[in-house]
Image (cartoon, rainbow, N blue to C red; front, side):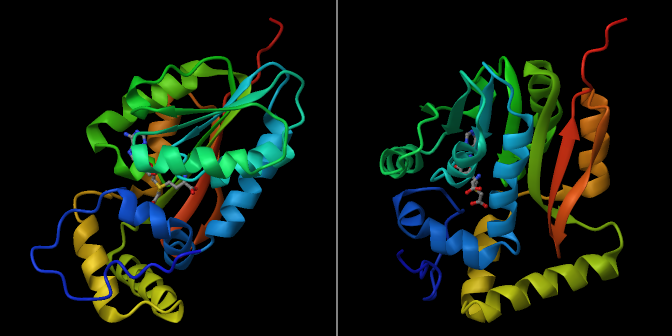
Length: 247
Ligand code: GEK
């Protein structure tokens, strides 16, 4: 696994962060050293999918990057006639993801799609995963995406939504930002790397509060939703579409 050293040296006129070939080369190392709880969230996404994936339905991994959530689901989903669709709009990510999936021996069919999430039909879904992807979608487009996901889920299906989050209380917000930077420092990133990455992500990764996420999920129609995992300013929610009733 190549080490993430993208921001190790001073960069003049720092460009906005992009999921290009340079990032793809170091991505597994970058995300593990940058996102507290990442490995737990990925593994538990597999368990959640294993519980909710119904026979003959589709599990979506939206913003699949190199397929970590896809592979976790592929290990756990047993449903007859189930498949996984992974979507990413970075050509470099999808091409590398294809070779990662090719080396995996599980049999559940996986289809990888190079597309913007906003252009992909979500149909006959039992599980939809948005692991650290919604934060890169323009805030004004997020409600419509949530509504499309809700409509594409079968009754009894779930959405797993993992995000970097903000806190309404400014003291807690600063504490969690500081703790996240401590986490990165403990994982070998320098102050320069932390500062340059932060600047590159400005206006590219736009976090919101957990309340904003819960309100949007409820407005989209999800009957139940709440946080199942949190470490500092990184959290994962699960939202349930109520099962069909007989009356
Ligand atoms: C993981 N889920 O390993 N349409 C499609 N893909 C998009 C869009 C969009 N509009 N915007 C961003 N992406 C993965 C990690 S990374 C999170 C997800 C991170 C893609 C983008 O190309 C990238 O691959 C992914 O979403 C976000 O659990 O790096 O912080």
